Image (cartoon, rainbow, N blue to C red):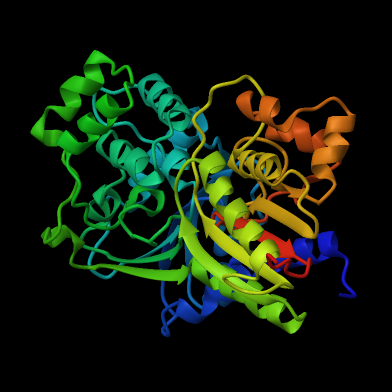
Length: 426
């Protein structure tokens, strides 16, 4: 095929990101009546880019405040943009969450609030519940991130330790009308899970949050345990009248990005196979992908090369070592270890927000010679995997992908490009 495999994988990644960018997806969903006053609040890695779109499109008076991750800001004229820490919240996130609540706490039926929500909002809009300190939330957050807990489990705990999540923000806005526009970064696109659902009803319970902490053997401070055992810790439940004026609209989801990449692959002459949104331990998900790639190369199943296997979702990493690396680098390192240089197989794994975990790269690239080149440098894929050192492994191969913040987030994007013709058994 007359294609540069690495460049083509980068183009697929860029296509996936572009398909979910606020500049492409938000305007069409805004209310048709854009006159009058609107208060804009927002949280997430796409919040500043989303705020720019509202400023450009709204014809009436616009004011507000949004919070995004450090480095993910964008210049706005009427909506204040504040940057804070992610994935572990900091004092800046705490301060802006207080200000957001104050901004919407004394509104009338005539008021309209636009809430711009995207992945990362949980950590960025961090306001601990009464009696819980920021340090308590930080320690539990760090422990959850290392534990291998799913995003749904983490957000269940976060919601019940918050004064703003689990529908509480919408309750604070009552009786104003609230229009939430969300970019999904979670498998299943559940409104209750995206950034811990600040403006939607939450069916999960405090007892479930306690059970999750117990399941992962996380040390729980006394104040947190006491709070979770109190009826006050319950989130806003379905049917609560304070949510009657709250409207939720999903404007971008991982599937859209996978489909956009599939279209580009097909146009280039590759058969696409979309596996969808996936969860699970990064290294184990990689082994499944490796098995599919091997089946394609050896037997032409479930489709024949040339082809592209696409998947998204949010995997997890149980931290065992002291290396550097996010879940995408971990996935790719495990894939490299599993395939061991299988001819004709190239792969990219990256986070669509431009940040793999807390590193400066979006992800990495694997080529058929990655395994051998690393071995020549004295690097063992299995040893580096034991140390969770995907970043270090691919940095040594000059295989890191650095995009800078993209200002959107539909979570992980993985593409395995297979050029090799099938080798059927005799």
